[in-house]
Length: 215
Ligand SMILES: [Zn+2]
Image (tube, rainbow, N blue to C red):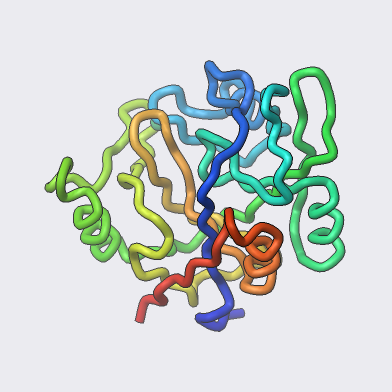
């Protein structure tokens, strides 16, 4: 089924509290397995298989939070997670500390198959964003896993082919990967009702970002 253009929104946050564990893998080892992500570019090789583990020190207390380093990971406090599970179509996964469980939950996005972006348009947007430091570069291909990674931009900086996004769940992640060095993240979109609910839990930290539909 094709989706109405206004149905998906992005979220932006002013804070990234807490640090994934262990630091050496930026928290990726527990989430994807030691061999489950590329050491050359930081991109996971497949779906998330394990739980996010957060360092116990400064464990986030917000209702909705994105940790440092992992810019496509959104987590909920136990209380918010219960409300979200009741009202929305989401997959939730436990968030742990090195020494044990917590009541926090991670929102697991559905990675969609169809491209979100027209490559030429995305390339133009990326170059515009990075014109100062990388005027002619839009990304790089990993020599180890061949993943093409676009230099980082936000969801609202290029037109999204919203009509190609179909999902039974209310959180989706782009097939395109963004980042630099070992940083790798997918773009996230939320069904509008969920995005507004999440931003509404902490309006000073989160805001809804409208994305431009590709024509
Ligand atoms: Zn790689």
